[in-house]
Length: 357
Image 1 (cartoon, rainbow, N blue to C red):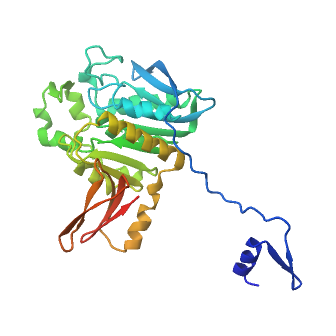
Image 2: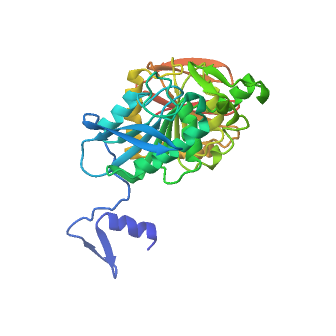
């Protein structure tokens, strides 16, 4: 009897012994290793906790949203953007906490342009590299919290904080995934474009409303922000506004070419900021991915099935229930209404394939 036939008979509750068929009295429930899908519920409550910790000789402030549940929970460590603070992308943080995921948000040393920053340090002494060290120390502190599951630690960052998050993830272990909002991968290139020669850099200057110092420039002047992205062995989900004129979406598209396991969600009608309703939706999506897995691990398989080189893949979050499916081979355009909020688009040199998910 072939193996396939034997398995089929067993599944039907029938076995064969010496040519005689007998029927089992009770059917056996097939075993599966597939994890049950977790439905995300954002009706939970949380407690706000505040912390102080030391990093690079400075006292740093952190705030955590901790779900009101028993036991250890997944933990997301958030890094704010240039001149911001722990309240950056606050609706994302609150949504995650209400979904049962703790969020630990730090204020970088010299990272806030507020008139009353919570962390020590001057903005003129801050740089991407000082923030990388701050984040490393925050990971060490936050991972040891009594509510944190040390096997479910994720990093999340916005703008400059997104760049800091990616750079840090290249150097630390036991991180399960990254969530980046319009990450500033283009920052070193922008710096070199603005200051072709290092000796032309002033001691201090204003960058997007934040007074920064020469150290900010010198620390990343020779950096290639994309160089080591291919060393990241964890999944990365990038959200980027299509109309971002501070960090253009091309920066994230370039990063996608280096990342091994990544997904780019293009936010239509969005610049270099997330509206509160977008933040809430994204928080829900991130919670679903933390509980049920970052499902885009199969993108490489899709590329292989298409069987052509020069393929890229991205996911589009639409603000409306319409999208344009462009066929570059014959320049035909068509609009169609779909019920799904997401579509995945796979592109090579001559075609674009768009799938509703």
